[in-house]
Image 1 (cartoon, helix red, strand yellow):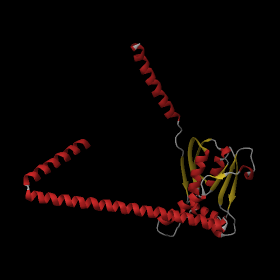
Image 2: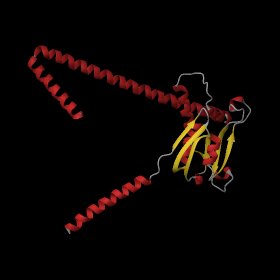
Image 3: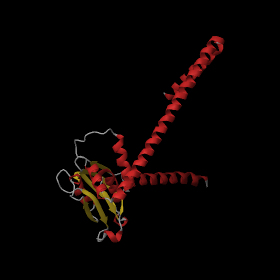
Image 4: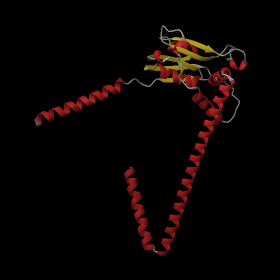
Amino acid sequence: MKSINYLLYPMILISILSLINTLAYAAPPTPVISYDKNNDTLSVNANNASFKDILAHIASRSGIEIQMDDKAEHLTTITLDNVPLEKALSELARQSNYAFVYSEPNSSDDNSPSGKPMLIGMYILPKGEFSADMLRPVPLLPATGEAFIREKDRYSTPAQKVEIFNHAQQRWEARLKAMPTERREKLLADANEKRLQVEQRQIEREQKKQKHAEKRIEREETRQARLEELKTTDPETYERRMKSREEIRQGQSHNDN
């Protein structure tokens, strides 16, 4: 019976290791997505990646609102290199039905540098479906979350004149203007409130760190004062304590090496 176990255990171990290796190699690499907000171009390198996840990343970076029906989800393998955003989205959505949404050309702020209406949204439906109203696609990136991110970014850097056209920010501004006034104001107010809360928490964390640092300095000064007193009142104990400290430091240094 023991000889059977000796043979069985290595076989089980080999099987487990083989399974782990198989699962590791079977997992597709994380897609690499890069968006150039100045040139409004997109680069994607994906291998069997979630179509929905790719689009969610693009929405967060480009400022476009992408609404997708869950039934349009599929795995995507594609390589795009600095392709204009609209053309890149068309390539990505080739297995689905889709429609683009553009800004109203009523204000110069809503238009791209070329003078054409700006692409601000996209509907994605399963192949063969045509009615977005029937399927009720949902935004891949909630507007509240995006508003917070863009408000946070706006206030995190000093105000400065932007020489290069920022397509992502301009697209977001165009979407805001297309919203009903009440919804837009509430969205920005909520985002600003959340930004202030985050900033306040950051201030509190910094204050705690400062207090901890001050306490450490205070404790070290107290210890040093006691050692100086001990050096005068009891030199032998002082020497033993300093020798013990040196041995501890050398032991730690040896362990680090």
